[in-house]
Length: 286
Image 1 (cartoon, rainbow, N blue to C red):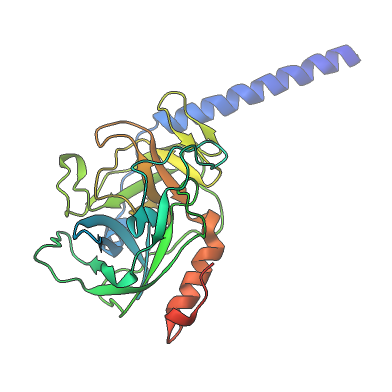
Image 2: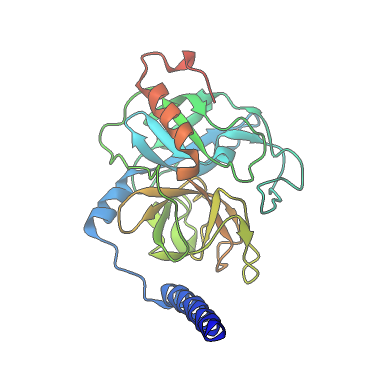
């Protein structure tokens, strides 16, 4: 009797594993859901973030308005880079040393609004007065930053952040940024269509080569130059669940890595508090 019960338990466990694998396979192979009108409207909260460097060059990234005077973006978009590409492991540790130097002057960060922007001819709608970000100088597992602005931008959509509840493999998101889609027309805001989350860290995807720390996830749809710092928006809730960090080429499938927003809920709450103060420069950075 005990032997029969043990056999039955093993069979049930095997069936559970098969069911989980079937469910995961169905999530990956299911047709992408349609983008709702509400989510389409939310894309107007995605802005261009341009940073001027000491040599006069300008880096164009993307960001999301999460308060009238607060932008969520990637840290590598608003800091001094000392490496071209971070090399990371599944624990979120760097294999090539520090990736960032000192902070850039926040006033060198301009925010631009609209479906098409040109940093050479357009005037920024606002400039930074402070950046709020993790204290590490490594981008692995921590490529996220907030920019407090010198004024409110009142005619854009304010996007909610998912600060509680993790992203999961098989969830559907819409990446949005100013990389101009597959044509890579930099300066044009473009959603990339619904894409499934392939892998959630910590771990690695042997099919795509993505290595993910505990606070990162991977999507399939390519993100291009200019999309860095742009949000991944949950197609069901309209919440920002991730920020573009790094990845493969613009044409590649997979290995497009995002920093999870819920992993930095404390930083987000701090940034929101700083943005609400009359003098944000006196607030302490995490």
